[in-house]
Length: 112
Length: 112
Image 1 (cartoon, chains in turn brown, orange):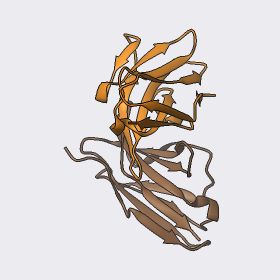
Image 2 (cartoon, each protein chain N blue to C red):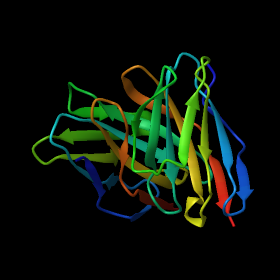
Image 3 (tube, rainbow over the protein chains, first blue to last red):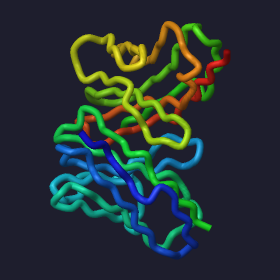
Image 4 (cartoon, each protein chain N blue to C red):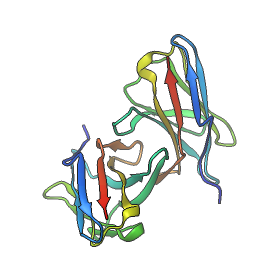
């Protein structure tokens, strides 16, 4: 069985730009969640998608948005990047009901 | 609201010694509890989870955790650590499996 894959692994963007991060869910998983992990911190929940609809959102502004596709892959889009958006972005997939999420290796975003 | 407190930011220990990483949580409802490990420059790997049933949960790599509802704790233990256990460990809680709330992490450093 395949795991969760994220791309790209590293990314450098300039303040004010827009970025799209991609995630391919583990086979058989229909729920995907995105987390932001700042340096030295625990991951913070951004949002979750189930059946292509947002199904819960953390305390993040609207410039953080997402998509889930029919094949359960997902995108995280961040507009108007700020320096504080520099972090490791983690994608996690699960089956309905969770019971343990499978995480990808993350995308390291640096905003300069 | 849910929260997770990991009482120790760093735990140094010698190889083959026992270790306990402490985790306390707060929640107004029943919860699911998880421990994840993060190796440098990698995503999160699930060590073990408590959903229901026996309060002693066994996970991978020889780790186990005990759920104590009265003390709202979910401490992680290993009777004999190895150099390869050096990593960041995160405790997480979930209500109804919609999102994970993470603690700030405990850095386990195993010395030879």
